[in-house]
Image (cartoon, rainbow over all chains, first blue to last red; front, side):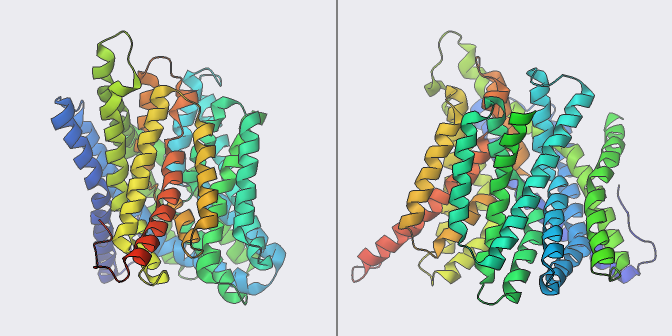
Length: 257
Length: 259
């Protein structure tokens, strides 16, 4: 299906790469086994009826396993080394503006392409269309999904800017987090109820496959360069912000749209 | 073959999704840091892998993960709803059981969680057992997803649950050992993996559309929020419990701590 490799790579390198795709494949498959086991148990013991369209689902699961494996492998060979190197370089460079701009773009760029977020945004648009919350057409759905993803992307960008600023200043993380949840609670009272569920969910969705490793690299890079910061604590802080701000921004998105 | 056309369509959309990251990384590297991209060939190959992988994943999402969650929701609610008349929330026992089972099963083997729990054992000097922590997080997710399913069945407002949950988190944060707090907060985020999110989302939406009187938009979302909230509570609870038993068990016969 996919052999998007440069043909100039030496055979040995290709072999090593294929082997590591295979290894990640078994890893992704292991993630699926518990899901398959639970579903099979409920189908056989509780419902006692066959799963409809089972072949299609199985083919789809193969797509999921192979797709996730290639995706993770691609991140590891290409993007993570580049992103980590840059995070360290910016942490050392000492220009505040450049660092903050990089933090924003990193948060935005990695979140917009996050697979779990694409899934949730697509579902949200579909449901909003069916419920008549937005005009029910193919184009308005995809616009809604895109806007939702852009909103979450911007919010993670802002989260990283605030988080980086916090690491530089050494503010304690829990005041900001608890204050942020206060804002969430307050905004929930004013936001249209249709957006609340989506907003709360988008907080948990953002911190996943692409975002966490790159963001952690930035946090750890900064914390190592600046004196008196512990990598474990400060790398964590960024991720906590990245799951908080999407709630605030998506609630605001619901109030505006 | 429709799946092929789907795949090509998805590939084009994916290209548009991945382009911004590429532009940002390369833009900053070349324009701001003024360095050439090291290992350009590997980076390009990496992007090609990401593109192909994301495309396949998104097709599989539509073909398998969404239908899995939706079909299970429809089938599990079919039996209690078939009787007609008044159905109480007690009739949906299997729905809660399925929600809890899928939450527990997908979490307990999560690689990010395994890595984190080993680190926690290290940080706490062995007071927190890695195995116990993993089970605490998985139980937290199971309770969270089951409670979220209960909320959809009863149609009670989501903010009450979440706000009450965060209140508990704040209280526990104040009472808990300081070292466990970051790990507990982190465990909320690591539990929801790329495979779990679509299934759980589809399960919630399937429930909300199957049960009469529920609006998918109002009631269908929120399961992920539950799944990220409850591990924080269960991890801090577990840490306090294990500290307490260690304190109390000192001098007494050594007993089994983690299940």
